[in-house]
Amino acid sequence: MIMAKAPVRISFGGGGTDVEPYCSEYGGITLNATINHYIVGSLEFCRERQEYDELTQAVIQHFLNKNPGIPKHNFFKINVYSDIPAGSGLGSSSTYVVMLIKLFMEAFEEKMDDYEIAALAYKIERLDCGMAGGKQDQYATTFGGFNLTEWHKGSPVVIPLKISRSTINDLESKLSLFYIGPREGNSADIIISQQKEYKDKLVYYDGVKMLATKMKNSLMWGDIESFIKQLTSSWEMKKNLADKISNTRIDNIYRGALSHGATGGKLTGAGGGGFMMLASPLGRKEDVKEFMVNQAGCYHFPFSFEYKGAQSWKSQ
Image (cartoon, rainbow, N blue to C red):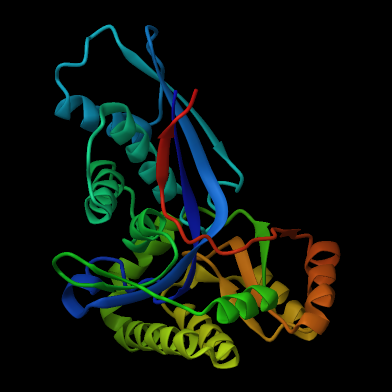
């Protein structure tokens, strides 16, 4: 049996600047990190045809096209487990595609570097299957860890960040992750809205991009207080990119968290729902959790940061 797993990511800043056509015309910057929640899959050869969704079938077809010698009577049985809900704002669809690619690479003993894997995942998800979205998710889950990524018309540049252990410990002690519920509609609606209106909102895109770089600098310097302020400012600015990024319920939950001790935060994906990340001092962290769970009706998801990207192996 072939196994693979890929971690989901938290987007700290720059989200939206990795979406076409802004990133090709003006250049984008994103800052993200993977966490210890995963999509895990297994693959076995079998003799009965299996039915799969469009994304899964697109990955299968890619590898069948590259390996025409596979006997026609062989089929693939794929089992998948995810410990996060779909539409979470943690890049789960891209994580799923990268995990599948790693499964088939292991099965067919193919070699691709991380850039090639992420580029293939982007092609399958965004171009072949026509799913609207940005570029950061495929690269985040493939590379793993903390990364600042520069987006250009050509190939992106992924810059792994070597952040001190004490800074990461401090960050983990202050951040909490809560699932506030599924988004209204889907992320594609928000992305399409951004793509249509981006030229009218360049000042906000440029501001989000600038803050992503400032957040990176704050992390490298170990200045968590400045990082949280910049992260919060970035979220407030990002809400101007499209109408559906936030809504009355999200704003009310966020204000309630602030009134119970949170010092800042943001939604972790395109917006509209999913996961909210909140920062709070250790002495108020339990107060924030009590409000989010017992009053706002959200689910607390403990997490720590994951430093490895997508992996695959053979299981007995």
